[in-house]
Length: 302
Image 1 (cartoon, rainbow, N blue to C red):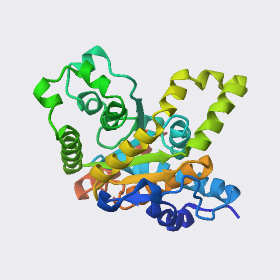
Image 2 (cartoon, rainbow, N blue to C red):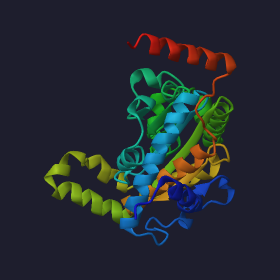
Image 3 (cartoon, rainbow, N blue to C red):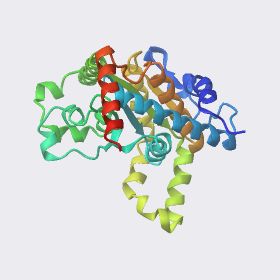
Image 4 (cartoon, rainbow, N blue to C red):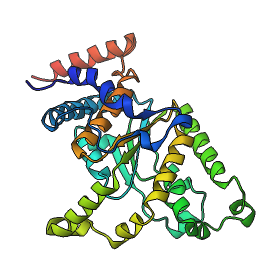
C-alpha cells in the first residue's frame, strides 16, 4: 500500500527529531553515526520520501499564497556527502516558481570587499518562497577556519584578525543574523550531511571509475581529505555555537543517501506544518465582489 501524506506527517517527527540540535552545548559529533538508518529499509524509505515530497509541495503552495513567511534551507557537508541529491529529491514536489537554489562557490573580488554575510544576505528568499543555500555563510567557520590563509584575502584590519575571540565573534554575528531573520519572518533549517571518511572514499572512487561521473571528481577534493579531522572539529564547533530553537541544525547521517533524503524531507515537513499555513480567506466585501464577478462571467459566457 502506498503511503499517503497524512501517514508521512505522523512519521516526520520520528525521522527528523533524533538528528535535530537546538542546544549545542552538549553536542558532540561522535554522537551521530553516519551509517544510521533507524532500522528503516530502502524500499519503504523511498515510498515515504515520495509522500513527503508531495506534502512539501502542498505546504509550499500555501506558503506562497499566504505570503507572510519565507523558508531558508541551508546545506553544509563534506564533498560527496549528497547535498545535491538531498535538495533534488526532497524538493521534487515544489513548484520551481516558489523556490530558488543558490550555490556559493569561492567568493569573488566584489564579495571579498564586503562583510562575510553580504553575499548570502543578497540571496535570501522573498516572503512566500523557499530559498536553498548549497553552502552558505557557514563556510566562514568551516573551510576558512581549516584554511586560515583564506582570511588574508578578506582584507580585514589586523586588530580584528589577531583578536583572540575572532571565531567567537563570527559565531556571534551568525547567531545575531539568524535571530534577525527569524524576527522578520524567515524560518531557518540547517542541515549538516554527516558522511564517514570511508564512504566518501567509496564515492570518490565511483566518480573515477564511472565515465558518467568523471566530471564530478576534483583533485582538490582529495587534498581536502588530508584535513578531515580539522573539518570535523570545525563542524562540531559550528553546530555547538550556532544551534538554537529558532535556527536548529539537523546533523543527518549521510552514508545511505536514501535515508539522508528521508530525514531532510521529514524535517522540512515537520517545520513547515508547524507554521499553520493556510490559503488566505476573503472578507465579506471580497466574497461579494467574487460573487459579482462570477455572475458577470456567466452572463458573458453565451
